[in-house]
Length: 343
Figure 1: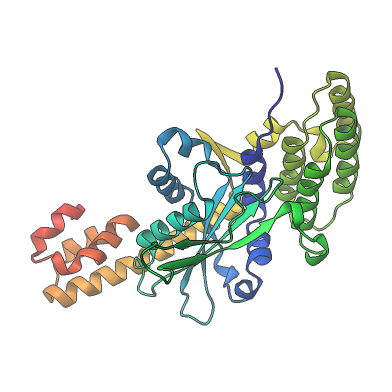
Figure 2: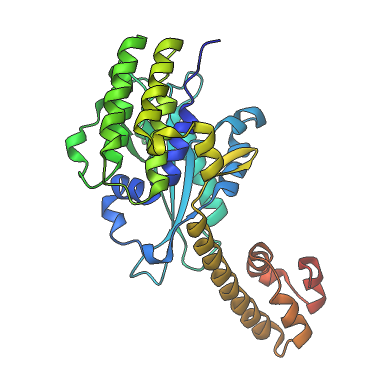
């Protein structure tokens, strides 16, 4: 049975491990204004909900190489910024890709724009990883033939792997090697001997690469190379496996071992470094406590002196319930109305 390229799995590992570097490459003018000391949050659950709204259920389960990153901006009282990144590995046949990006945008807008007081901002980018020009949109234009001017134009950033100039990427950004691997795949003929030579050459470069920040990133690069360059010939594949064992390190591990070690298995593997996850959990709890304070202030303002028992129950609510109260505060007429929020 012929092997199949797993583009989604390959790019998912890159988006997870090089979250900061992706933002730096796609949005350099925004990057310096992000308060990275607060960390970044990957909204995988929320993204899956949006995908189920855009695609049918079966299709949404297959789309994993997308990401929404939530960060805070400096100099804007910690204003929230949502960064949507999509990797497109094929030319869309029956749909306009730009329109799909716009559908993501307005659903992210509806979901998050007014959730916080700051009116959160949203930017997006697409990474095209296939050959040819078909479907490589840079914007979406909505118009009607009866109306002369365009009704709406939605722009998003793009990177085209086929035509990317690697010289424009900083030597200190590991994504330079990522895009070099991806570009090499497009330029390598579907011949096992050539694939083997290209894979060894890139593996040697990867082996000596010193620009990564941690083991997760080097393993993500190994993962990436393995998923993109597939050798059908069993003898050449065996030869490559022997090469990996000889050089050791991250290459000694199978892809399944890498994934078991670095990814949580929840129907679909979603990678996250344990320490980073702990930091994000602490950040979420801090955000929840701020929402608790805000809800208590709103309730005291609306009902004057709120009973202490009610306040204690508010302190135990999760972020979704707290946000619901904030959104519905004008519809809450009596303290008894709070029962619908578990109070």
